Image (cartoon, rainbow, N blue to C red; front, side):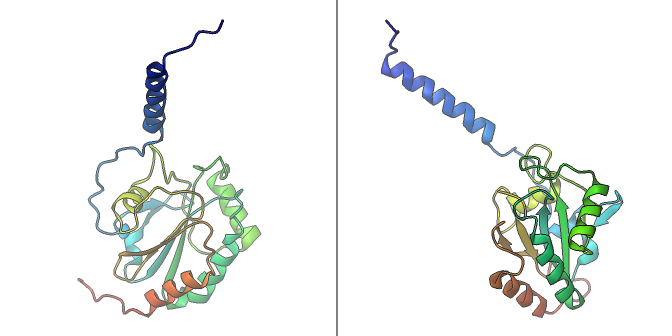
Amino acid sequence: MPMRLPLFVLGGLLAACVSVLTGCLRTPNFPSTGATTPLAFTLAANDGSPYPLAQHRGHVVLLVNTASKCGFTGQYAALQQIWTTYHERGLVIIGVPSNDFFGQEPGTNAEIATFCHTTYGVTFPMMAKADVKGPQQIPLYTYLTRESPFPGEIGWNFTKFLVDRSGAVSARFGSSTTPDDPELIKAITTALAAPAPTAGK
């Protein structure tokens, strides 16, 4: 006859399992970045060279974590389109490839660059592959997901953060919001309409 465990024992085992799973899923406890703007960080460009985001002070910046083998990969086309449309007015789009979601960005940096250029004609800046979540999360994404006005773990590829001309994060959009969505376009054009801050402010 199978052994039956008392209910209080089963309850204790269940509580222990929940505790273990919660510990596994908990976001790593990173120290504060000490930054007040995402433009304080320096990324690695696709070719490995330093890419200080401070060079874009006074611009409107759209930060997007990307992947080449994702159901949302086609958003590269719309990203390139809005880059072409609004770049002269001060919009900068920065792609941050990440392999954090079921290995959907497996290529090397060179392979990613080739794919983006040949498949979608991407000309906006692409960074080196980086972790946007987990224990190896880069500091920029620690700031965005913990210290910005729109915190929360990155849920999937093609999450978008909009940074206004003052360097503040002004909006966040999920993967399902396409780059040409009217709400996102309105946020971009509103940010572009604001005057650039004067030097020293």
